[in-house]
Amino acid sequence: MARVLFFLSISLAVTFGSCRQLRISLHGVENPLGLELFNRFLSINSSTSSNDTDKIRLPLRNRNNVEYFGIVSMGTPKQMFKVMLDTGSSNTWLPSSNCARSNWACQNHRRYDSSRSSSHVKDGRNFTLFYGAGSVIGYLSKDTLHFGGKELPNLIFGEAMFQYQEVFDSVIFDGIVGLGLGERAWANSTPFLELLCAQHLVEECVFSVYLRRVPGSLRGGEIIIGGIDKSRFSGSIHYVPLTEYGYWKFEITKVSVGLEKIDVSVSAILDTGTSNILIPEQSYDILHKALKATTDYGMSFVTCELDSLPNIKLLIAGRTFPITPMDYVKEVLLEDNIKVCITRFSPINLNFWILGDVFLGRYYTVYDATEKRVGLARAVPDVAMGG
Ligand SMILES: *[C@@H]1O[C@H](CO)[C@@H](O)[C@H](O)[C@H]1NC(C)=O
Ligand SMILES: *[C@@H]1O[C@H](CO)[C@@H](O)[C@H](O)[C@H]1NC(C)=O
Ligand SMILES: *[C@@H]1O[C@H](CO)[C@@H](O)[C@H](O)[C@H]1NC(C)=O
Image (cartoon, rainbow, N blue to C red):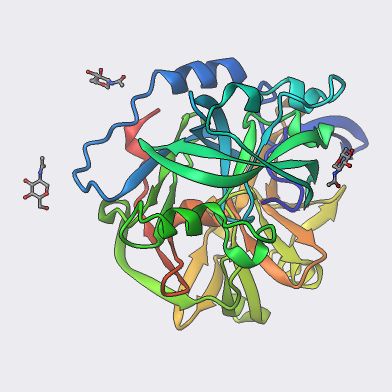
């Protein structure tokens, strides 16, 4: 997950143009729809028309295209949680019922109570997780995770005693289920995907992600564990080998805008836990120069005439995957109804690209642990179906 800047309705006070004081809500609507989202989720019936019994479907909720989450339960009897299903990390944690009173981020979310679960097993180790957005500290436990009608016994997960307030208080999800691979998981623990494959809950050790990006719609697509859904993409799936067995990491041969090279032979990860596309600083600057952007207050402003902006082309193992202005430009209404446009890219001090929800909305992605590869295909836009 999440080097900074994902989800969060960050309000920035900035001056723009002729010294006007303006407030920009980076992620649009300030009201996090919390209660309504949750209630509507409960009334959803996650049974599907699908007939392939070996696949597990996890419907996702979408908050303003910046936060995607699903519902799982932990323990016996089940305790229910909203979780971010994060391809950018490998560990799972939930807020603990033992967390400090003073930690609002914990108090304002659902908390796992081990004393109420007959399947809970104590682990005894402490943990600290560092996300780009802030850290989570607590101790490990083991219990049964329930999701999509299946159960996964013996999952080692973190009970969070402390969560970095500014970030985790502002999100709807309670905890995180890491969908990454073993090399980035806690020592002597098997992460979610590898555990469910080891327990043969699915035939194929693979999952796929379909993210729906329809403004104002709560339906966020779904994660399918154990296979793919052919109705969600067009054309063929293009597979690329993994270059690491922790992140879902692979190589981009070249990034270009028109004839201009932005980056070559650079690694990238697929990250459902990041809402933007994060780019190494130097390439970020070259890219925004090519887009004729002006950078101010940590944001890059471009023209709102989308037709005049170029596609950004990612060449990956011989196939080109464009990102269009529709994907990468966000319109922001300032006071006085002035419209400005900023890019959905953010610079990071790392040497690889983080392809977050902006990218995953355009491309259906497949995560194949058996063949150690990821697959990419054009997602079928699903705008007609409403929310
Ligand atoms: C799911 O929806 C169907 C039809 O809408 C309904 O008959 C059924 O009771 C629902 N199941 C649950 C578990 O809510
Ligand atoms: C499920 O799929 C199989 C083959 O794909 C088909 O023969 C069968 O009729 C389907 N069952 C239902 C209930 O749709
Ligand atoms: C775990 O953390 C708690 C609270 O900080 C501390 O009291 C305990 O000694 C730690 N346990 C281990 C095994 O490090």
